[in-house]
Length: 373
Ligand code: ADP
Ligand code: MG
Image 1 (cartoon, rainbow, N blue to C red):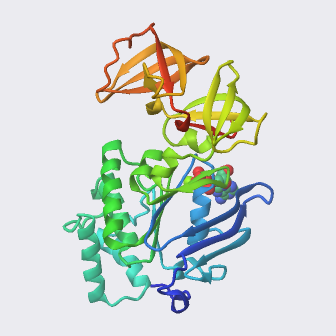
Image 2: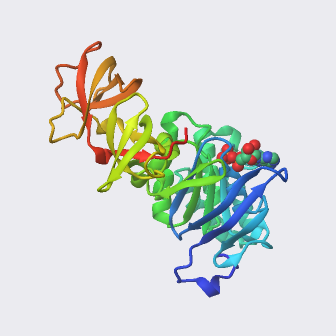
Image 3: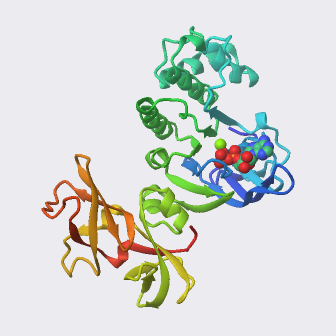
């Protein structure tokens, strides 16, 4: 456990970490992290997800202590980290490029953080074995990193971050160098290790499916700002702005102007001329511009009036058979990149390239968001 303030906060509801109005600039001009406020709860797996350059690594480095905040404070266990050096923060770290010591054996790599903490030799041995068993490399202690595959090396890096039983583990795109199958396997392994150990994990990735697979909560970053902080299902089903809707999963975007708002719904005139009913989430009122966001699986083919209160013609441009569903690209409301996902169980004889079909969606599934492009 950390020396940091544990006596005052152990057993309370104090989050493990609090970012308080944290800002960061490297050049004295551009803020790459802007007024970040974020609580990290004990035991959770939280992911910072966002495009390259959005400030994820900078945020992680400030928490680890390798970068300092330009403004604001980071609090760990109720104690400000301003004067706490990295090695006193009780934080394990894993990076994309493993950063193992090539001249040391696997066991020696794992011993390193334990020696730094002056743990007795006998105890070290036991901890190392347990950590290696955890990542299923129990028999590899005497190998050198160069004698291991990429996936095995990344497991060693994971074991080294966990071996001293830190309260908090930070991972920055740790699976980025691995191929798809191995990456997906490691995602589940890390998730299970987290569940078994109960350690708090802050994970960085730009890969939305990785974030959805692993996280309890996801903070979506763009341009140094958290755009939304929510569970995976909330992010997918209830995106709060156009950026999140576009970044998480697939969505159809229709641009228009709000014509009326009443009874919890709004009426939008699309730029292409059609009229759509939608659920107002983030609009500035009548007359404001809006982006309508609609998931491809929320679209019904040949709907009845009861099913859908928005019904339009769609010209089928392209059909892609994907086994469990068919992906339809269609021209809808002047957009020829409108996507519809049709489940395998839905029989739709009219579905053929070149045909014009009727499609529809419920206004509740069509979210009126900000106009940001
Ligand atoms: P992410 O991890 O989301 O890709 P980063 O935190 O690495 O984003 O970078 C955020 C912004 O800060 C980028 O514009 C990047 O170029 C800049 N940046 C990152 N590290 C440094 C540094 N050491 N010096 C100057 N600028 C940096
Ligand atoms: Mg990064």
